[in-house]
Length: 405
Length: 229
Image 1 (tube, rainbow over the protein chains, first blue to last red):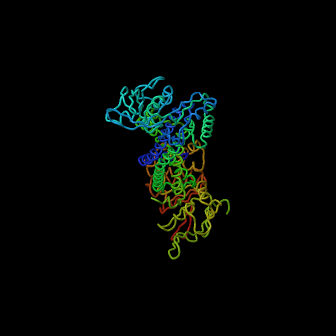
Image 2: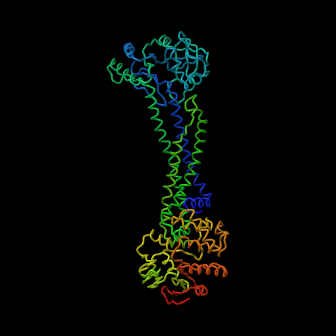
């Protein structure tokens, strides 16, 4: 029966299958881009939250500004000054600290098979090394972290092992650091451009070995673990205030918690998401022009039909409703196909990328709200792009339309 | 206008163009049609008879004059009010049938009712009765392309009756069909008229005009005569 506009719209679409399919593809591609990008960014956010929440009880204190972004960052090499014994003593006055681990940072000369290279050197207590640098997305490619009491052993970054020297360095190899022999106890995974903690181009040794080979005891960073996760933000502020007071400089220390780091990463990811979706939105604008074009052609082809409908009593709104319904149907079908393609595309991109951070697969997350947003956007595109053609159809003079051949 | 006058046209003009290029399609037409009449409008091609029918069917509006359709002045109506008159007061039958090609016979009849917001079940029930009346019960699921000219015109007649209009307007209803189908269509229109509907036919076929109760002759946009059919 033709008792409603939906039936008429469906019949009209069936009559113009090939044109409708092409129009529908435009919408499908736009929605696919939006769904897959939203899914990928959501997946990235979840991955970051998942990884960093395991460090939610940790505070990293550095001197000066610390760069903390998904693209890079890490400890200062002392340009902002060093922490003093007084600073470390002050920390003992703060309640709720489980452990305080000074980090020493400097530069060193590495010698391997007669070749000399410069590198960054990090000295950390061996019993904390695994906890700080052993998180899932970093961790070791081979070997193991040092134990308490280990001497003249080091962990080297991926680039140092495979790119710095003509001959690759392997776990178990011997290298010279500042003229002293060191046994390579392990090699870090490639960190890439993920959550940087500066492992790719670094050598990590125990704090004791660091002092021995550099003769330097200045602390450029402190890694602190608190007993109660809920107090981490308050303690971070307290640490900053105390150390800044010691140095008479309001901006001397910077205490970063994982939640504040997480917040800044999420902010960056949100901006990336908005930019990507805006780019995907352009394809939707193109698709909506496609719908408008299809609908205008359809209005022109069906001028006589519009005249007949008006002659038998159709109101302007009835004629408009038929064309808007067609636009909505095309865009909803396109939207549904776009959602399915978006699922496939996001999954494919996730697999192809091999991981957002080394070792952590990028699993796209497409939730119900993303699908609802995508279909709603598709519907809106359908309504907006068919409004003009529908209005044009509705405004036709019945006598002129019915005479049109 | 008395209750038994369904159409009153006074000094009706339809002018196309402006200034020196003015063309009087209809000029000072004065006609009164009583409820239940069967009228044939005759005249040569281009005489203005179809223009007159289009004005009566509210498909077009007069340039000046007065036209009352069932008491409503057409000149002062909005687009949607004119659509309402077409929907409730008028049933239109075209020479070329003008069925919607994507819809079946049943759906074409139902479509007219859907614009009048008739319930879906009622649409189907009534459409089947009307198609049975025009002897097409066996063709209700066929699309126009699967029907003969005569059958399509009978579907158009059924559609014109969908919303119980006061007036049936037919523009050369037998012009595109063979004489046998034409005769059948005329018989149906006569039956409709016998039930009290006002039927107005535009034709140049004298045999069709003879079957009407009254004939109005139009020549060069002017009513040039009238008399019994």
